[in-house]
Length: 432
Image 1: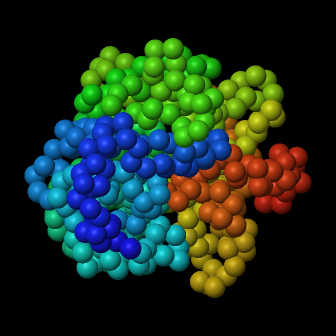
Image 2: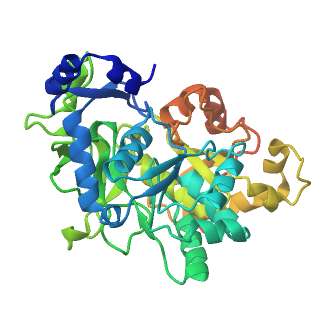
């Protein structure tokens, strides 16, 4: 039964009463956290949160007010990026949303590319894996390149870090096709912030930059375990978790700021107007046996950049050990590196001499840039089995779940650090 038919058959007095009973604090929906670092929780989303956040977005992104937005979007509505951010901005700004049945996976990315050849968005949102596939496809796909860039005013990514080489490839294609760069927006947010919270407003944005707080949101920077945690207070912040008073109490400090668990640094300590850059998730970070903290987020970003375009993501290992390791999830481009027939099993591709030699150089380069045991990747292994959505190793948004991967592949990580896992790569020397 549709909502329209229910309203049409309901007595007018009941409809009026329901409308009158709905206010800023009325719950509009529950959205579960992704569970990247802890068990998922039901986040209370109120009408105030959603409405305030849409106005904050409109003030942070003036492009939303220039014309009704057109989106081609696969992001799931049970997550805040798709269901709050993108559905909300379409409704709030009188736009159009084409539902993309594709997804940034090898099996479904082709459908996304097909849709983008047919429908030209004015704004385009995706996760880093999706933008990487699009950047690679636009190098040779003339129809895709011309249609996607015909009227798009802004690209926006979230969910994980976008490697600088992918960013550079997108800009190169844009400059060649239309003579200028498309604005690349990003920032920081979460289910508990509706999600829009921090946004880059500087045109000189680089991978890892987050920017400044959206209007009406107050930030608090707090030292935690050797890092700086960012905390939120504002009209777009959740009042808490549904039927979980303990988790709600733990998430707010004595001044009523929500503790995000996200670590940040200044882009430029001498110019706070440039805003913040990402410094990883505090809950992902861990200590080596020496007591030294390993900053997982920044180290993961370094590995992806050093291995581009052959590294999709990396999971950092070494909790309570003397060294740091990395489980590397490769991109499909690694097949070209191997130079083997297209139907060669991925395991054989990764174990080929050419691929192993290339990643030996990656390991050497990473070691040369390390400043100590916590930033030196002492061992790495290429993973033939991709992260599994069914096992929670990757979220619906496409971001890696470090905790789940380490849980399900604990034996493999133990073997890598124990020296019994074949094709484990170690730096030969601390120089490239």
